[in-house]
Image (cartoon, rainbow, N blue to C red; front, side, top):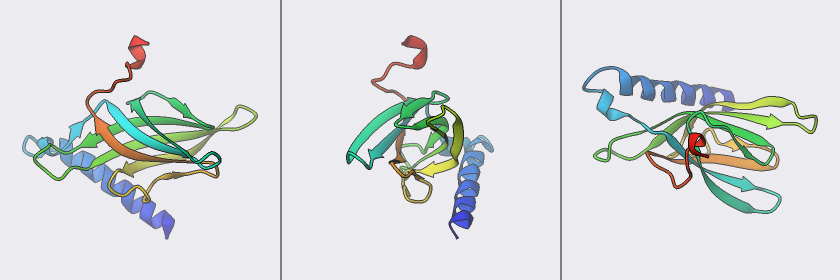
Length: 139
């Protein structure tokens, strides 16, 4: 059942992006954003961290490496929602990477495709045009 829901969520996310780029009238329904905002939970310490990640930038959260590939929102005139395509790799003690997640996350439905690791949970909060964190090219 979970696999079916993930497949439906992935198809819905792809449809949202396609609708946003389908034509002149529909292109206004989706805004591509350069920054994805995530919340991460360390289940051992109970600490929650909110962090910004630029599209195609990889950041480390515990043993997870998170790379957002796209982050879309709707114009301010419509109902606000954020959807992002995310890839997450888990770093083992032997320094090997294993793909833990690759798919669409929805800010409105964090439990639908949240990263649920044994130690860490990560979910999408929002997509933004700007961030207080300088882009990787300026660090």
